[in-house]
Image (cartoon, rainbow, N blue to C red; front, top):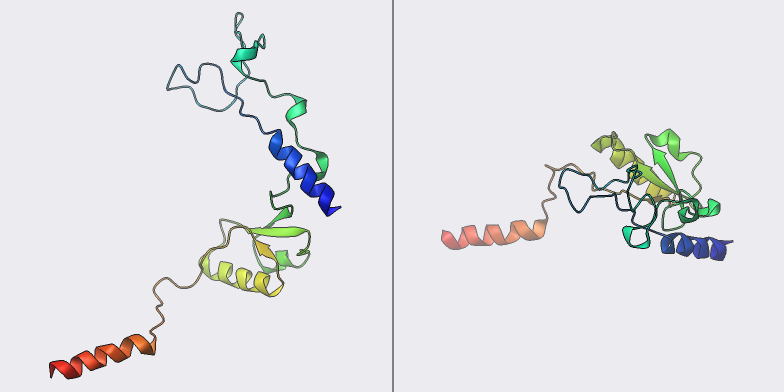
Length: 149
């Protein structure tokens, strides 16, 4: 099954197409997002070869891998510790919601690490003002003070 999923992920990647909106290279005000051409004489609406492809059903990804992360795991959005209960580390990866704060993010990340769950948007959630003073750095400063005296 894992080999089949890897194969389908490669198929999905190979079918990736960039659909260009008509006139996007002519005017700065036109955004890059796809819009269906509706002009009466539009070459793109008539699907001339040089004018770019239209989004058609053939560009869709296979059902087995639709919505999957490129690593082959399904994404689960996590807001708190309770959301980690039903997560299977072999088939799921978690993405911590953007609205989760630093303290709760740190707790969720530690719990996920315990359970061997992959975190797709890991961040350093330690306290930004807290610096670990190592004794090695303190020793040379004391020696410098003694030399000055």
